[in-house]
View 1 (cartoon, rainbow, N blue to C red):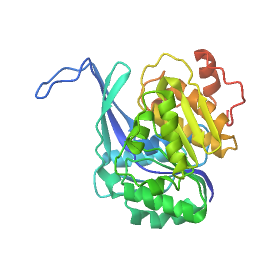
View 2: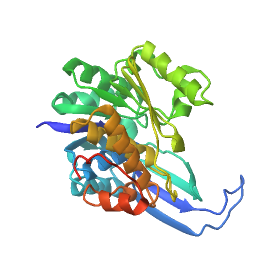
View 3: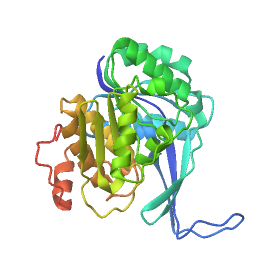
View 4: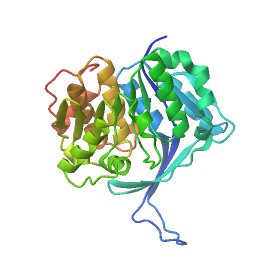
Length: 316
């Protein structure tokens, strides 16, 4: 079976607490609200692409506990192919999130995600081989990412690597094997060890990666938009101005949306424009996956927010 997108990565149960302020060390403070939701960078990206109509497969490890069983059920109900999802020995990964206004702090507990080792991927060669695009992040081990990149390269399948959370020890040779490398400006600065305070400095850092072999560097720059740099192209795609409510999962919605639009046949520039528009909608809604609209919902939400996407949206 051929999939538009195969996401190899993490799933996390989000444990989100709204706070008035962070407690000091040793201090206990009251918080106004708490909720639990499905998250994790890999699962978020898969869910966003699936919501938009892509045929998505997930390769991941859920926990052997109640949270793992709930997540596996959620994958199935979301229309995501779970042939590559297996049950680990550990508890499910969790991500306690502390939300103060439109800012957030997150703690990652890998749990069963740590059992998604390079050897596990050998069981899913056919899924990797028969995919239009492989999407990776860094909430699983770098060694697993490296093996996924090597396997995709073996079969001529392009890879999009979203290097979050940042890791200072990533191997540039594997980065250079990716079709798309999609950091934010902070992650770009950590990899290149170059300043990223201005747009010109961000461009220079992105060009350094292109010179090292990366075909397309896509840098998300918050409210300033997304910068695309390749050997023969440099373009800043502006963001859409909205009143943000919750930024959790916004970067994942961008990656998932770009993957969808690109594998549906859009050129890179247009897919980035539509990914920006999708992510802009998500930050006006609470949660990560709970903020991701379907293709059917999207046009009305964009009109309500004054987001003018002049090109027809693929999948809408």
